Structures are given as C-alpha cells and as structure tokens.
Length: 276
Ligand SMILES: NC(=O)c1ccc[n+]([C@@H]2O[C@H](COP(=O)([O-])OP(=O)(O)OC[C@H]3O[C@@H](n4cnc5c(N)ncnc54)[C@H](OP(=O)(O)O)[C@@H]3O)[C@@H](O)[C@H]2O)c1
Image (tube, rainbow, N blue to C red; front, side, top):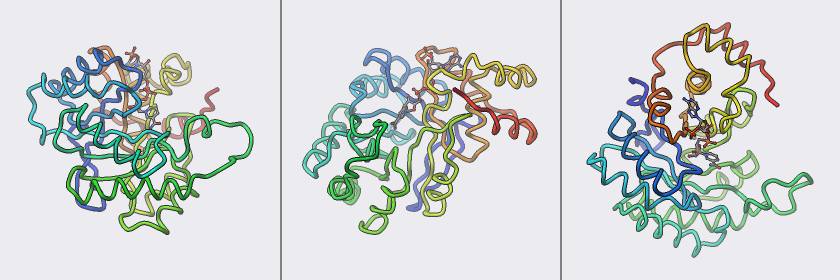
C-alpha cells in the first residue's frame, strides 16, 4: 500500500497524500466506520464536505481510530450555496466544530456556482465572480489564522480560476475536479498545473459507472486487478491525487492496492475509451 504514503507538495510547502478516502453519500454512521477503518489500514487522507452531512461521523471515526491528528490529512468544503463572506466563514467554523478538530488541512470552495446553477443545459446565467472573491476572503482569513493549512477550489473552470488568480492575495493551491477514464478535461488540468495548483480526481470510478465496463474489464483481467483498481491507478498515473469512495472494507483495501503499473499502450487504450 505504498501509494497511500506518497505525497504531492503544495505551493506553500504543505504535503497532501496521493490517495484519499472519499465520503460522499456516506451516512454519518458509515462515515464514522469507514474513516476509522481507513485510518487504521494505511490511509492518511480523508475527503468530506459540509453538505455531505457526515462531518460529525468523520470526526468520530477520526477519534475512534486512535491515529494522531497530525498524522493524517483532512479536507472539507464550503457549501456551493454559501456565496457570501459571512456564510463561508460560518461554514468553516461549523466544519471545525462538527469534525471536532483544531484545524483543517485543506478547505475548498465546493463549486463556483450553487448546484442548481451549475448543471444547466443552457448558457451560464451568472458566473458568481464577485461572490467567489468574498468567499475566498473567508478562506484566506482562516488560512492566515492557522485554522486551515491550505486553501483551494473544486469544480472551477478556467474562467472561474482566472477570476481568483487576478484578484486575490493568496492563490488557490488545488482544484478538485471530476476526472476518470472517459471523462477528462486535460486543458483544465494543464491550466491548473501551470498555475501551481494540485489537481485532485474525484469520482475516479465514475461513481460506480466504470465497474462493469467491458473494455476496462479487459485491462483489469490482463493485470489480474479489479476494474476499480484500474480506474484509480489510471488517475494516479496521470499525476493526480485520487479520491475513491467505498463503504465496504474489502473495497477500501482493494482501492489502496495500487502497486502495479499500467503499460503505456494500455494507458493509450484507456485514454481512447468513450464512456456513456
Ligand atoms: N467536489 C465535488 O463536487 C465532488 C463530487 C463527487 C465526488 N467527490 C469526492 O470524490 C469521492 C469519490 O467519488 P464518488 O463518491 O463519486 O465515487 P467513486 O469513488 O468514483 O465510486 C464509488 C462507487 O464505486 C464502488 N466501489 C468503490 N470501490 C470499489 C471496488 N473496489 N469494487 C467494487 N465497487 C467499488 C462504491 O461502492 P460502495 O460504496 O457500495 O462500496 C461506489 O458505488 C467522493 O466520495 C467525494 O469525496 C467530490
């Protein structure tokens, strides 16, 4: 499980482990159980969010694990609906309380626009540029106060990033984006990396969609691995931090068993897959 201990280094020198346990769609009880299990089985990185409504469970799991707080990395997210300075500041305080922790390793803005404005078929009505600058100010303050060790964003596109980069004091250190076999925005990844942002791949297994894909199964059979392992290893070989989620202990173990290499020809094959 060596990949669990590998790290990427932020522009401020802080390190973030390459593999983290995702907790979206976990109940508080599941989050408690899986956080404790993961931390006791080699994971040193947990990803939650204010709107997952499971931070208290994650916090309990952290305590139950017995692992020292400084020995693992914890991320949470300011709600996509919190678009004022006051709302963002309150989210950070509420997360610290719910997770029962003195500090957060990473806080990110969950999305540039409220969710109901993110997934529209038509043109984007409003970018929320001014609002995101206000929210960012709350993150910067928490960072300067030492409550948060690194700050970043999620689901930000290039225009959203330009708005921050041109107007803020402390630059975003990371962008957490949807990225998996068949769903990649390499232009965005390149833009982030050129601007000193670490890129995290969320939904690396396509929220389960990739598990039964016959083309990925072909590669999995060749390496004697699961489709989940191929999907996670693919993102890892692309140089991204990867956040697989599972509520099953055997899958949490399986997802961390990444000590193999997908050959360049097979990476090319996976690069070309179209996932519907
Ligand atoms: N920033 C954002 O907007 C955003 C959005 C989405 C996700 N995320 C983060 O990224 C994390 C991961 O993404 P995700 O939750 O969409 O899902 P995912 O990790 O892509 O896939 C999870 C699904 O795959 C199954 N699974 C996992 N490992 C498996 C294995 N080894 N064998 C068989 N099945 C396996 C899980 O089943 P079981 O759980 O039933 O075991 C679950 O159904 C989230 O939990 C969250 O932390 C962030």
